[in-house]
Image (cartoon, rainbow, N blue to C red; front, side):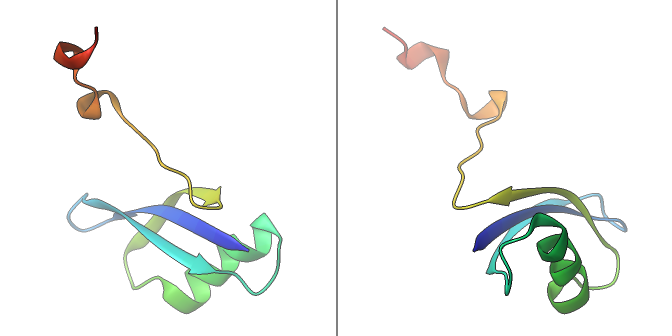
Length: 67
């Protein structure tokens, strides 16, 4: 199963994403797997999304293009 993690760098406050294939189709396992295998020191998970999800925030929306 593919999961996308949104994480925050504790030192800088910067946020980023990381997409990986979890070894099991279980959200709790995927959360732990990211922390154990992929996260570097100081990275804190904010959210875990199954699949290839696209997330839009209000800063990505342009109301000038709305008809």
